[in-house]
Image (cartoon, rainbow, N blue to C red; front, side, top):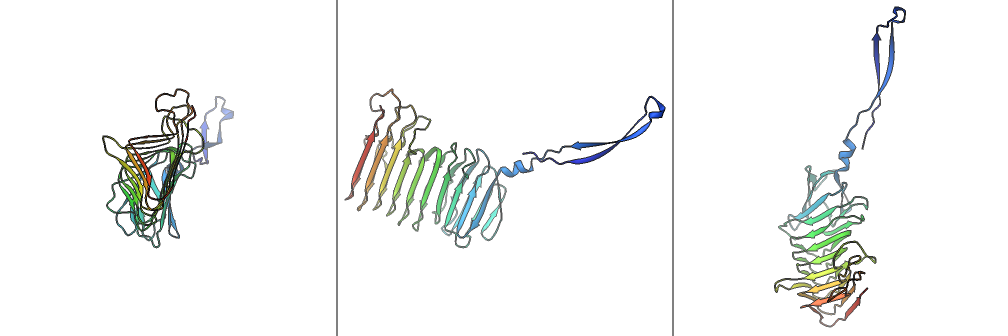
Length: 314
């Protein structure tokens, strides 16, 4: 962004005219433009604010990357940005250029990370934490070209805290243990979901949603839960419900929900509901192009219902 600074520079120009009777001094006014990148730099700053138990973090630049770790089980977190931080430091909040230190702000209950719907390709991941999370965490990237969310390191939410991850325009990948105890729930909503690490809750529900009601560009299964080489991946709850809803990519033969070497299980009176809509491509063969696909997998409950809804578009 340009800042235009108008400076009236009175330039006294003296010149010797060819005719001696025109020798004169003239005053001319010039407009000089200075271009500053101060506001442009300000746009590169991730902002934070704290009020009434809620810490709000907002990305402010394209391709900004955020990561979080839990430093203790007392409400201490470290949030790192690929840009720089802007915000008002206060009790329990301080920052360097790239690191925000959250040290038990009074009454901290929830952390919200968002892109305000206007910043493209914001991404989020979990760093290697040394402690569990004791605050609710919501990541809500709603821009149509939002970036990926990655759980490559374990993320455990205790004391009934909830995890809610959303990226409208991209993939959520869970490749390490993600868990919540007590009544804490886990909700993942993305263009598509890939789960290769265990997801577990106690009494809380699990939601895996890779279906916003329309076909999106890309080659992907709406929700894919898959182990490999004999290693089973678990999506389990002790007494909560499990809901999986996926839609395959636009013009592809990908499945709505793809289960491979997996165990989806709800204990107690918990129910399991799986809904899959295949991609709408026409080149369908073998096992492709199905609403719900399962291979070497188990879907079970203790006493609750199991509901499967599969739609093939081919």
